[in-house]
Image (cartoon, rainbow, N blue to C red):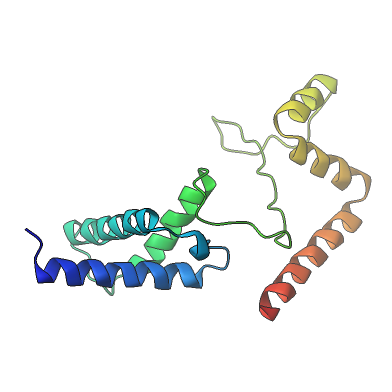
Amino acid sequence: MITTDGVNRRANLTRIVREVLSKMPTARTYALGTDAERTLTALLAAVFERRKIQGRAATDEPIAQKEFIEFITALHRAGINILQARPTDPKPLPALWTNPLTGQSLGAPKGLAERSLLQQRDPDLLQWFDRLEKSPYQTVAEYRERGSVGCALQSLE
């Protein structure tokens, strides 16, 4: 049996979902259908329920909305199409490969075999290594410029 309290709670959670998504610059709110809205509302309810079970108050950091943003971002990274990258968004830096035992970065590839492996598995990282080896200051300057242009474009919106 659906109670008035349940309907009000669901409506409030749906409102919070829409508010959170509206604050995320690349959220696809225009494509949010009824099923997707219900699913996100249920996920937000689960975030609140988990906080309740953990004994965390609504004002404890991070607040539930921030946790929900982190969750949506994680879903996006996993391939769920909630957020959409804009053509003007700077491409993220590739992650350095690390030694699984020490956690230290492996650094630039040494030799043709390592370069070939990196070209197959992580061509963006190899491109960064090549550009940094050839002209480190120019590469960093261009990266910084792209980042500041992206920030400037976002501030115009």
